[in-house]
Amino acid sequence: MNWDQIKGRWKEMTGRVRERWGELTEDEVQQAAGNREQLEGLIQQRYGKTKEQAREEVDKWASEQS
Image (cartoon, rainbow, N blue to C red; front, side, top):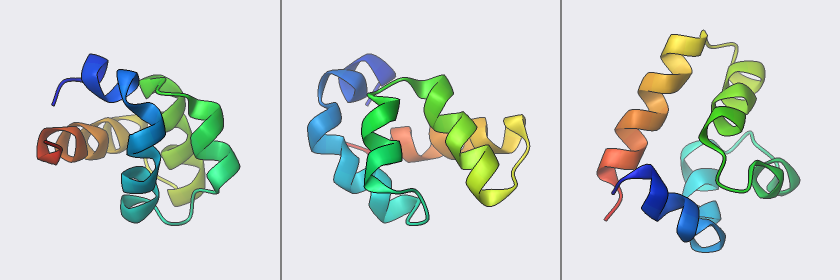
């Protein structure tokens, strides 16, 4: 699934985001509102990842969505 599709279905995708990155709060996921860069930033902060690591994780997760 491409990011435009994920963004368009964000309310539906929030559960999947929380399944993958359980340390993110519901509020944080809602505030990201489908903004990929904001989601990557939250992952960086919460998990201590580099920008590149967060981007790769989001890429992998997005490619697994159908």
